[in-house]
Amino acid sequence: MRRAAVAIAAGAMAVSLAACGSAAESGDKSDKSDSAAKKGDDIKVGLLLPENQTARYEKFDKPLIEKKVKELTNNKAEVVYANAKQDASLQNQQVDTMVTNKVDVLILDAVDAKAIAGSVKKAKEAGIPVVAYDRLAEGPIDAYTSFDNVTVGKTQGEALLEALGDKAKDGQIVMMNGSSTDPNAAQFKEGAHAALDGKVKVGREYDTKEWKPENANANMEGAISALGKDKIVGVYSANDGMAGGIITALKAAGIKVPVTGQDAELAGVQRIVTGEQFMSVYKPYAPEAEAAAEMAVALAQGKSLDSVAKDTVDSPTTQGVPSVLVPVVSLTQENINDTVIKDGVYTVEEICTGKYKAACDKLGLK
Image 1 (cartoon, rainbow, N blue to C red):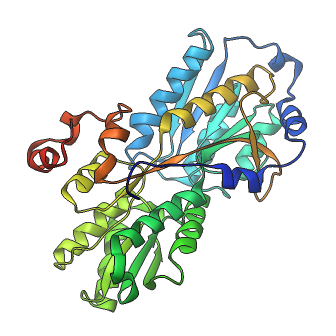
Image 2: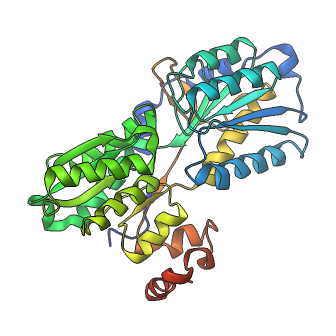
Image 3: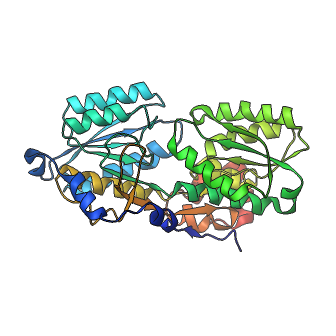
C-alpha cells in the first residue's frame, strides 16, 4: 500500500544542489586560526534553538546533540545552550553573548534566516564557525544539516491527495503554510504545491505567523467562514502544532476532513491514532542531530568535513555549503509501530493513554 512506511530519499535534492569540487569547498570552510586548529576534545559548543512551543527541540534535538558531542569528545566538551523562544532579536543577542564567551563553534537553528545573517558574520569574524541546523540561515555559514524540505512538502501533498481520493475533483482544500520568516516553510510550500497543483482546488492559503497553533486556528475559522463548511474537503497543514489548532476549528464547525502534519509530535501521533489527523511527516531527529554534532566538533577542532558532509547546498548568501540531508517518512496509522515506536521516540504507554487506548488496541499498537 502507498501508506506503508517508505523512506523518502533525499537524493533528488542532493543531486540538484550538489556542486563539483565540494571537497575543496569543505576544506576551505574548515580553515580556522592556528589556536582553533590546535583544539582537542576540550571544546565549547554553542547550541542555539529557535523556540520551545514545538515539542521536538527540547525533547529530541537538544539532548541528542548534547549526547553526540559528549561521545565525540570523550565527555570533555561543554555544550552551552540557549533557546530564542521564537524571538529573532533575542536570538541575535544570544549569538553575540556566545561570541563574547568565546565558544569554539555554533550550532544555530535560526528563528529568522535573514535576520540572523549579521550575527553569523560576527561569529565568523571572531573565528567561530557556524553550523546551520534544520533551517538554512543566511550569512557565512560553514555547514548545514536538515531534511529534504521540498520532499517533505511533496510527501504531505501526496498523502492528502491519497486521503481525498475522488473528492479532490470536486471540493476545495485549505493550505496552512508555516511562517514566512522560515526558509523551510517556503520549501515545504513549494513541495506541497508541486504535488497538489492541478489536482485539487486551493480555496484559501495562509502563511501562518510564527507557526503558532492559535494563528492557524484563527486562519482556519476565517477559511470556513469564507468558503462554507460543506466546500472544504481537506487541509494541508505544514506541521502538527498547527494541525492541532486547525482540527479544533474544524471540530467546532462540525467538519471532519483529512489534515496533514509534520514532526510526529506526540499529540499529532495520538490524533493519527484516533483518525482526527490523517498523517504526519516523521523526521528521524537522531541522524540530523548527530550530523550537526559531528560537523560542529570537526570544525571546532580544525578538521575537514569531507567524511561527514556528502552534499552541498547554496543559500541566498553562501554557495557550496557542506551539507547532510536526512530522509523522511510518511507517518500514518499503518506504520506507527514501525516508525516512532520501533525507533524509541515514544512508547506505546506514552501514546495510548486513557482516551486513546481503545483506538490503539484497534490498530494493534504494541
